[in-house]
Length: 267
Image (cartoon, rainbow, N blue to C red; front, side):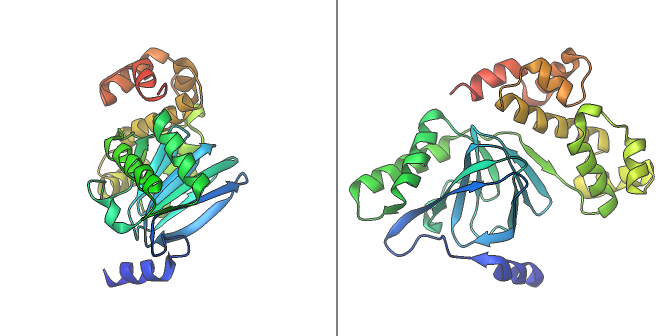
């Protein structure tokens, strides 16, 4: 625990946190493809949203893909890093810690409705939401209301800490369309399938097959959010038969990919 506290203090930045008299501070930034924000933490809660592009966010053993239509809630003092696979237009809200009530205590991906998107964009345009400005307070309260009611989105993957198992996980995430076998992934990582299976069960809590299914789901959500059809998303994550992908999606989320997209991506 002392080690973790020390890490947070070392990487803690308060540069963008709300100053006295401000309830929500904001930041707009354009990132080039491949840019990586090193691991750090803020003293304030964050809502990170991209109006364009997909973000890869890591925190501890967690990994999230955040395409447009989604935002990630990051509680104050949570260490995290961000990678931009392609160009990203990022819009960030920094909320005073007292505003985090009724919001998750851990990183959570949230669906961004059309109205919440406009509220975030308007807050960023204003720059700082002042505590004594009636219009700013109304905007703040609307943002909080929509954040609290936003639906969570299943774009989370737990990654193993062991370097060999992590190499297997990262190789699979990067090459899902080729549907590589566990044996071929293990050869490149320098470990046996039995060893990798044991590590996944011990560090991630599920076997590799179950983890691969979740990885496919996460990546499929990204593709569908980017406009891909169900058939295209199925092929991109390694399914040769779209019907098998539809069944996996239905068993995991309780609805078909088409129904899910209509509910979460048309708002």
